[in-house]
Image 1 (cartoon, rainbow, N blue to C red):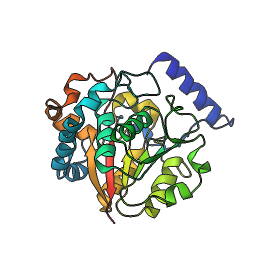
Image 2 (cartoon, rainbow, N blue to C red):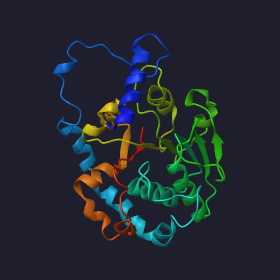
Image 3 (cartoon, one colour):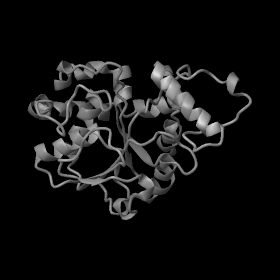
Image 4 (cartoon, one colour):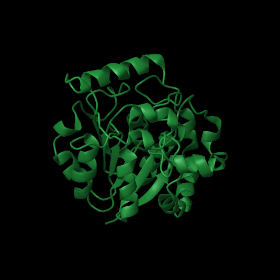
Length: 283
C-alpha cells in the first residue's frame, strides 16, 4: 500500500477504535493471525464450475463488441462527461461489456448504485443506440463528473434513495451495483443483497463491480477490507441467479477472445483489474 494510503488508513482506524466517529470497522477475532493471507486462497471450485458452464454466453457477448466497432472506436474523442478508456475505475472489458449489454438488451430503465465512469459508458450506449432507456444514478459523490449527461442524478446515499426507484424495475431492466463493497449489518451491500434484490422481479439483470470470483481478492487489495463477493458467492450458488458475464473469468481463462474485437487495440490502464459480474434473476 502506498505511503499516503497507509497513513490515511491508520488515522481512520485509530479514530474508530478510540471511540471517535467511526470511519470503518474493527472486528475482534483472536484467531485472525492464523487465517490465510489475502490473495492466497485457492480457487473456489464449486463456484468455478458455475462460471465454466456459462463460457458460451460470455463469448457471445464479447462477439457482440464487433457489432459496435465504429462506436467503440470513437469513444475517447470527446471531453468529459463523455467516456474514456484511459482510466482504471471502470476499465476496458468492464466498460465494453456494459456498453454492449445496454445496446443489445435495450432496457427501459437502469438504476445505478455508485456512479462515475460506468455512468458515462452506459449513457453513451443509450445515446449511440437512440434508446429510450432512463438511467438513474444514485451516488452522493460520483467518482467522475456526470453532470451534463441526459440522466437522473440522485446525489444521496442508497439509504436515502426513494424505495420506488427500485420497486418500479421490470423484467429486462438493469440494476447496476458499484457500492462500498463492504458487507456489514446495515451497510449498503447488506441493504442491496437482503432488501432490494429479493424484491426484484424475475428477468432483471444485476451487475456487481470488483468481483474476482471464482478467485480470492488480490493481495494488493487486502488493505481495502472488501468482502462483498462472499455475499455474491451465495447468490451464484443459490440457483436464483444465472451468470450473464464475468470480466475476471474471461481475462483469467480466455483473454484471446478479445483479439478479434475492437478491444485488441485498447490498452488496459496500469494497475487496473477488469472485474464486472453480470447476473440475471431467474426465480
